[in-house]
Image (cartoon, rainbow, N blue to C red; front, side):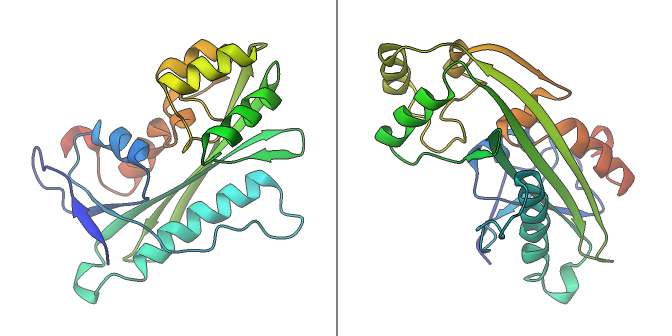
Length: 211
């Protein structure tokens, strides 16, 4: 199991916490809570199922990521909570994932120019001790400005957001590409809904304020 530890601050909680993700953005968000945790990249097939709604895909993958990490735990480490999360960007019936390179990011932003995009962020907190899972889907509506090709190129030169669904980092310079965003949790758009996660952690007996 490929696991790395973050610096531990405060008291160790009674329960171990694992972030089941390879995303540096989710790791940085979770670090805000000051809870010691480790990171494991889940090895799952992220291909959508036939006729699967994008939100359902995100929910399923968040659950499968967390469960895959739990399945690797030895018997003496089952007192562990695993976080799984997945995100899709949707315009109508079209799903937009991570572009991966400059050319695809330019094309993606051209298609999203002037469009309203719904980012569906699914969260799962899986209890390896009893197999129970808390799940939630957090939606964020993002309206992109009408973008010129010059603006798109200038943005990607300064902030190559090739590993972000939608090709923009709303928490950084990508905010300049937007006209409006609406949602219950700004961290959901970055990839990990911390408000929902804190609620789940409290329910599981791990209060971030007492960690």
